[in-house]
Length: 219
Image 1 (cartoon, one colour):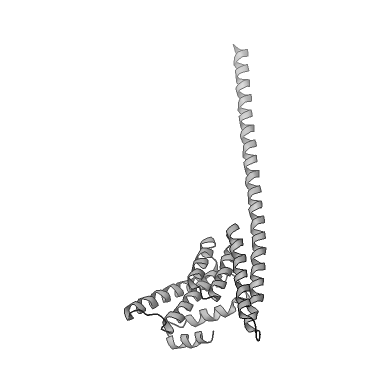
Image 2 (tube, rainbow, N blue to C red):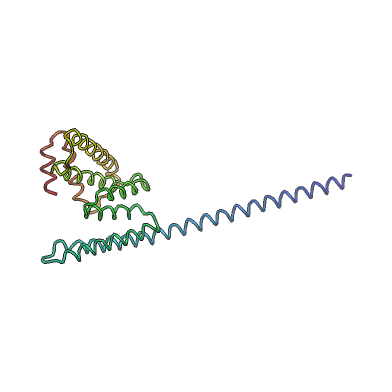
């Protein structure tokens, strides 16, 4: 009996050890799969970041055409649209916050403010502390403010106009406030400095409306 009991105990112990070893093996395999998937995702992000930067470089070169004497503007706008299509392709494969920011910049250049706002909101959804995206969305709201309110380019009732201006003001100031909270965490790239000036102008709005308008007209 004692021998059978010892044999049973030994067999049970061996079975438990095999189970533990199998569980450890499965855990190691799962961790290896996750590490491999993480590395693959990082590589995709790296490649997407490179492609986004190439698309933005292409856009910046194209936009220089606006300042060339006797430039073929149709060609300039086509090249800018080509840069936007490059970003479309990249973002269809990898949703990179910076890609949405850059595409929003192009939409803004084309006066497509709703598309710009959507892309900036997506960038913020993917990266909630993305200060530049908050800044640019605030700038897009400011564009709408200048275009639709200051220039009286909409045909709505006075009450509708007042409601719209309050809505735009609120959204812009909220985003500028969010940008201010993140501003100390990073240095603003040189190409975005002009938007900081717009932000600074909007800071005067509540206390000095005329000063804000005067500053915005410079940009």
